[in-house]
Amino acid sequence: MEIVGIGTQIVDCTKVRKLIDQHGETFLAQVYTESEMRFCNGRTHVTEHYTAIWAAKEAVLRSLGTTWHRGICWTDIEVKCEKGQAPSVTVGGAVEEMMATKSAGRFLLSMAHSRNFATATSIAMR
Image 1 (spheres, helix red, strand yellow):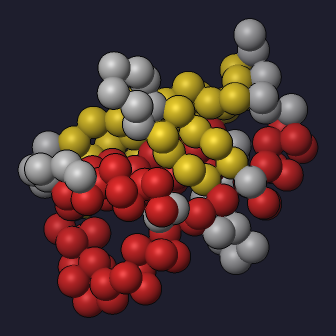
Image 2 (cartoon, one colour):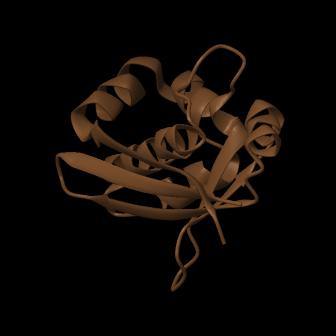
């Protein structure tokens, strides 16, 4: 399989915690899907998981050669974390269109976090 692009991102957990505290459900609904919110809220380190998923979404965009901009909904990218499996990505909307333009068929994704930072790397594959 051919690599289309690689993207990585690191995000400060404090930044995400402040956004959640300031904007609550409005912020969460704009950035995360229902499935992602259930996953994060079911974890001990809620903020760190929200931050890792945010980093993953940004890494996915970077692997397609772009960053977030108007026209892209954060929820166009959904990160799925199944126990015992590598995280996976599904896309829709404008991100799905970008994938088609770049001839990308899937993503390989890795995420990690500490108490202070979360990071993710995405490889877009043909």
